[in-house]
Image 1: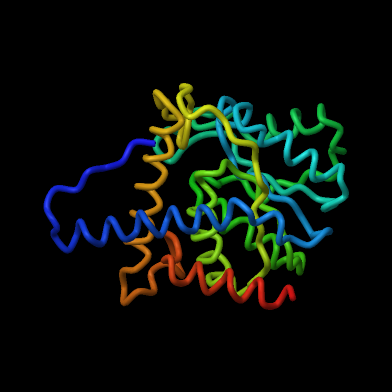
Image 2: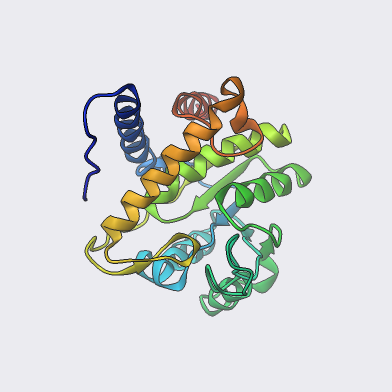
Length: 246
């Protein structure tokens, strides 16, 4: 994986390096998260991704496997038409929720087990906001999140912010996906193409760090209404989640 080089040792560069280390540390924790999860849960959730990312990492295959293994009776998914916040054309960011439904039904998941959380999940925080609202409305307390490995940290950071915003805290775990070749071309977030998965991972790290920095504005509380919860809040959440599970 390529690394971003920081010129000099300014306070900004030191903070950037610290946050990159936090990302890698949290990513390593979440890579083994499925092992901590309960045997049965209220729901499975699918983040939206372009077809190349879904197929490369086996995202829908894993969601279907978990469903057929009896983990949960419901799969929540992003119900948008695949447009992005920069491009209103359907399918510009990913094929859309209807495509997820078609592909999951092909994998033997009953149509009535598939529930769209909303229709405006144009980015990760919007997705987690819609999920948190559904979890609250239905009184659900456990969910298995299925997304590509390099997205888990930003997903959880945003989800914690969404829980705070809706005043409904629940236990979210992350499914393990199989490793893939980091040198293949891939279409990533918002439909952008990357020369390699490694390049897409670096871009994801930068998005995560930017979300943390924006989330720490307004006296360190901006993450409650937008962006993502900072690393220390993510660690507190995981510690409390695991404590309550024992």
